[in-house]
Image (cartoon, rainbow, N blue to C red; front, top):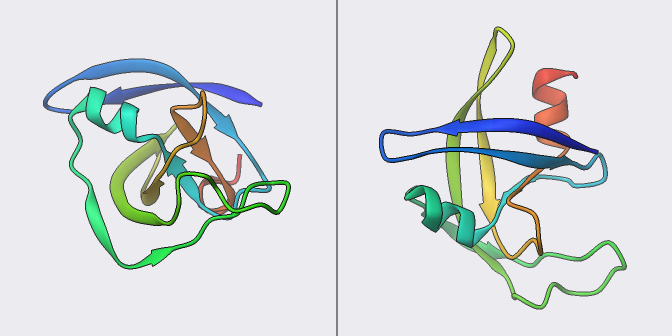
Length: 104
């Protein structure tokens, strides 16, 4: 399921759709979207290998960076970490961490 979201930073604004994926263990953001929005990313202390839904290793290799964002849904505001990786045609994937934080 896709949901509409708005991203607002001091550098840019964008309206897009995020994929809500209950099977995703984390939240993810594409490298291209981060560059488009001029967001800063941080290196992970230890790269994480990522597996696709079909149990194959992701072609982009290990995840090496993350980004932390303040997220607001209705009146609830939380800080969520997004792992930066190739997620195909998606800009953002909201996984289990988002669902646990906001209980949609």
